Amino acid sequence: MALVIDLFLAVLLISAIGYGMILNRRIVALRRDQANLERLANSFHEATKRAETSVEKLKKAAQSSSEILSEGIDTATQIREDLNFLIDRGDKLGDRLEGSVRSREEALTPNKNAKKPEKALNSQELRDGVQVKKNIDSLSPQPRGSATSFDAEMLGNKIVKSEVERELIKALRAVR
Image 1 (cartoon, rainbow, N blue to C red):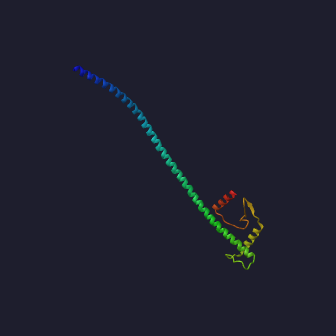
Image 2: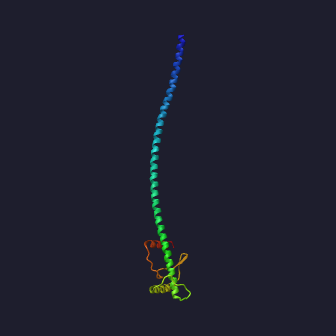
Image 3: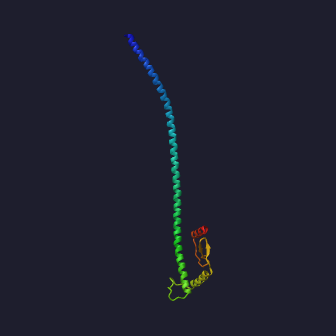
């Protein structure tokens, strides 16, 4: 019986040694994989840092672009307001010029059925009106592009122009 117990213990020892060898191989593989896992974790950490710096740079670039765009919008708004002012002023000046020309024409051609001018003209304005009428009669339209135009200063129109108006006129002439 002692022999059976010894044999049984020998089989158990052999199986324990075999199981220990298998377990040793798995532990070695696990340690090797652990080193790979550490390298993978380090590379993931580096990639995360690079992504964070890229996001910060992207935020700064977006903020800079936003500021530039905001300045452009402010400038465009100011230019739009200037153009609206110039359009209103041009409309008023055009209406005034049209009324002045009509009233001077009516003053030069006596017509009893004609309406009275909107404002009374003094003698200087009447002389200017005669001069304007002569200048208008002597001028012929000069084609520019597809439209005809007269030189306002040749008509005796002395308009004081602001810097913005001069720039607008220059830009319009450049377009023609």
